[in-house]
Length: 280
Length: 257
Image (cartoon, rainbow over all chains, first blue to last red):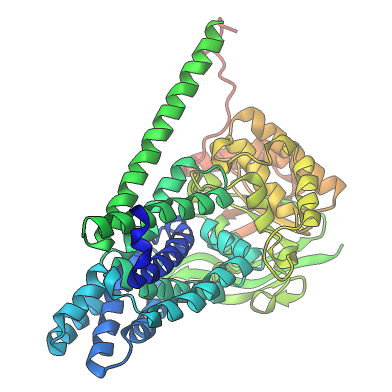
């Protein structure tokens, strides 16, 4: 039976957390991609690993320490982004190097390789009720803040200096946004793993950009594609006993290719339709 | 005449290299001012100093009586940049969304568009004659149409002054003509002060009431009717700077037309 999957309580938890992450990752991702900062997810997830390792060593719930460390790093990125104005990606490399260096040292100290492994690649069987109870309120905060400042974030992504002229509180929103990114990354590590978080932040957005005709549509399509990918990934990984994170990402790649092919076919059809009209 | 912008002893430099030195300038309400001068003479720098995007080395800029640092009423100021250069044309947003974003300060608790605000979008689109393009993606429009949309976006907050930094680069001649007509309409009918950087000296000296020439880190203000642009162009040509004067194409392909 296909629905057997829902009789396992760990799968129920995985589906709840997975679907919430499927909404917040691309929601944040749309703004990141349009700000040309899509690699930030990658940087912060490596930094978050440092947090996970600290948590394991100190015996604290690792998501909390990951959250703290990645928020600090996010603020650091924002500061460095100002110092290297024309090399925004340099700030990412600096923080990524620091994070990964520290993480490697701390992981070797912690002697808990299997635990770290689940945060690197994601593991649905290890989603706890504490994970569910952490993800739900924080996701509500993320969605709430984005909705509250919707046009502010939109304007920031479109053009920062124009946004300032329109009275958008640029500095505050930039820092707030970076904090949202760090929360998203830390929360997503459980299901898809630190190494793969940035894919769920960017791939659905890449697919959506092929189809959308407005900013609102870009957000809606990104979330839809990501929900599709996460659920397909969870089903397949359960029935074929595959790594959940990897399966979800491969599913998003398949959907992305799907949107590219769809767009090609569509524009081909439109072109031939136009030619028919011209010939008539 | 009400002074709305006052620049006093303003200097800006990169290390020892002065872009602008000891500049004084007053802009009155209702002015249509053209900034002209060779590339690198500090026109864009001055605009950026005026809107607080750059910080002056010394001297001060006052907007509506307040220093740039303490100025808060940014909705009174519109800025249209050289979009061809600094705007991502594949940004997935409609004309409505782009103009709507400028209403940020007037949005309610949630920063989203209400029906009342949407009505204002319709009004400014009508003003720039682009009503049919409300739901089109910004990247699908031509350069001239995009600039009209950016003007509309500036107009939506009822600004008292609009700065334009070479807005017509890459825009075809016919659209340029319409664009100038629109600016004149905004200036004469709505009383909006306009400051525009342009290389198109023939046209701009026709529309503007004051011309500000940039050169040697200084500026010189002329009344438009007293400005001898032919003499100016000859001087520029002698300097071998990067301005190409308009010419009549005489003797070239004269039989074809």
